[in-house]
Length: 600
Ligand SMILES: Cc1cc2nc3c(=O)[nH]c(=O)nc-3n(C[C@H](O)[C@H](O)[C@H](O)COP(=O)(O)OP(=O)(O)OC[C@H]3O[C@@H](n4cnc5c(N)ncnc54)[C@H](O)[C@@H]3O)c2cc1C
Ligand SMILES: Cc1cc2nc3c(=O)[nH]c(=O)nc-3n(C[C@H](O)[C@H](O)[C@H](O)COP(=O)(O)O)c2cc1C
Image (cartoon, rainbow, N blue to C red; front, side, top):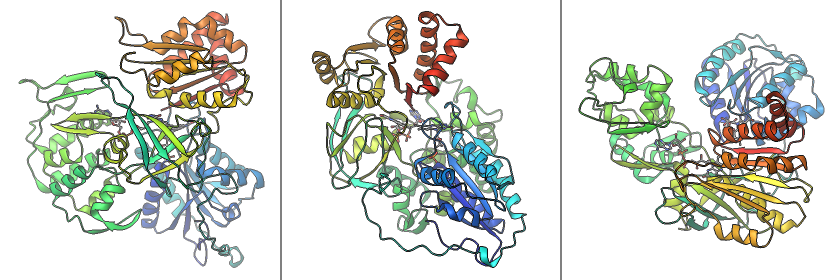
């Protein structure tokens, strides 16, 4: 994508470089371009993948928007450029830049890739026009505040271009060949997924389970794709046809309308099905209601029956027709006041959105959007990642996943997760094509030394990479011992891969297997409790150099396990709390890299 004509003959050009794995930073880059163009700049968006390091100095205005992956690492598409910048250290004097970093504060190395770019560009002599912006998961407002400063600062720069400095020569066009690149990086990506089929898809839960967890197998066919244990598979879903149909009907749109989206020219129907997330409404849409409601003066039509979110539940009664956070301070028949109450703060918007999708909201406020207006607001459809549950050595030509299907129901309509429902209901083993790509990990890997012991802790779908690890360890041989902690609600209904696990135990491949069934007894028992119970032995393993792996829920489980590890170091390693924290977080995690996480 690099090349083009960034500087030739004008001094208004702006290069927007994005580093992005699942599309968030890319979408922000496109949105930044729209704002920059309006500010009189000639902005061009560049995927860092394929951007020539020698072209950096030729762009006098550069905005970098990047996410962070792994443990503070670059997203895949930024790896090569970052490596080339570090290797060649080009002089960037005369270049003006600003960085917007997106990340997640629940990771230790928050926005580290963006911070690295910010420092590196400065170190190479470029001028920072506005400070780096670090954005958390809900990145839109922070990005907005960055773009509000960064774009005017870029537009205000007077850049005189010398003829000799003009655009780099066009690079020869290389015919696209679908094979592994020399770098070992797969040609298949989120933008260019390999279209394959699901060959096996079955429920792992026993009868009566409250959950639906599936084992799903994809064929790798002639893709030439390889993977190692610890990697994740990217899956590209489509919206359910009934939601697209209903949305079109509620808004009275023409499904054959020709529209232009980031994916090209399509019919409206196709764009709604493939390019945007229309199964769940976003905050931007709720905020846009204010203007719509004022301009049309319609009546509100709100009714809620119940809501459960963040462990607190509410049910409608005669006295309370809406949950406390959503109860307006003025009569609900006034739509303007109602929108004001809903949009009062982030929490009330989130509460409101928890039980409603676009169709509910459009009905509730009886609002009409043009198709173009709606596409401008809706989020782009993003791929979902799944930890691979198989070893390629054990299943050549296939990749297997353990997927928890997301299903729920509100306002009398069955809903659910975009990708999990797509895999469970629409694609299944119908032979319909589904797009996939590999998302390799650099950090969540097995110890090189096959004689090293490992402890794996993965409740629920967190077992996925450990099924793969076990298959690989069995395939590779070696004397390293394996200890698996697993758990879920009940041994009767959630004992995923039971027979395989029993076989590993019988064959001596799985040295220790510890379970935590939360609902099989009065008190709730989780994996972190089992870990602590076995603290003395866990500590012995750590002292012998064992690796510790965790996979699964980031919000609660991973935090509790982290705390349990610190307590084990205090109790069995005889350490103060500070020393124990240092040992777990710095020594094991950062220096020795033997406490490794795949949490989501
Ligand atoms: C590196 C990585 C590895 C992963 N590995 C796995 C794996 O091995 N197995 C696995 O199953 N998943 C895994 N995930 C999670 C996976 O990527 C998806 O996020 C998950 O499957 C949900 O996707 P979805 O498209 O079906 O749901 P989405 O359409 O993304 O919807 C999920 C959202 O629905 C909302 N929601 C959920 N329940 C309710 C409710 N009751 N009421 C209202 N709203 C609700 C929540 O906001 C939730 O975030 C992994 C994620 C990452 C990043
Ligand atoms: C496996 C994984 C690892 C991540 N590691 C980090 C991290 O170390 N630091 C951080 O700030 N954010 C981290 N994130 C959060 C991503 O940066 C964030 O989800 C971002 O919005 C992704 O944007 P993208 O789609 O443009 O890649 C991680 C996310 C995942 C799923």
